[in-house]
Length: 133
View 1 (cartoon, rainbow, N blue to C red):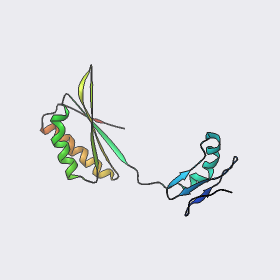
View 2: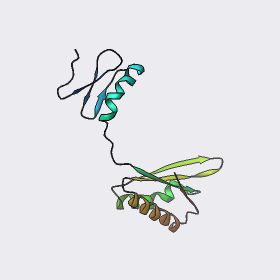
View 3: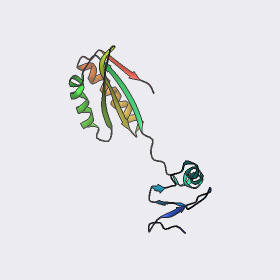
View 4: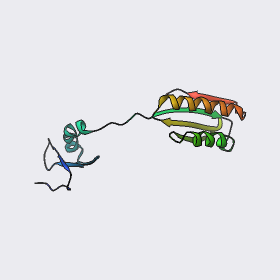
């Protein structure tokens, strides 16, 4: 017999030993990989999927974060439902940033990427590359 939190439901253990349990969107499973794999047959049908997050990257070379900060901040303020990030790089080949736009609405992400490319061109960034995933 297993004790589980109130409101929880059992996860069947097809291999051996006690079951796991689910409470809300949290699953508590066995720590032994072979036993946990046996529990996945009962878990997989219960998993809910959410909306897909779309991510697009624009690579800017030869421009530091200080130069691109203002246009990136302006776009982030204008698009609070999107996530915009800057990931700088530096190496023998040069420096720059990978700018990432993430969101659930593909059209909004694409429009924001186009606006970002235009804003970067307006500040004089010369090497702007759209990275296709």
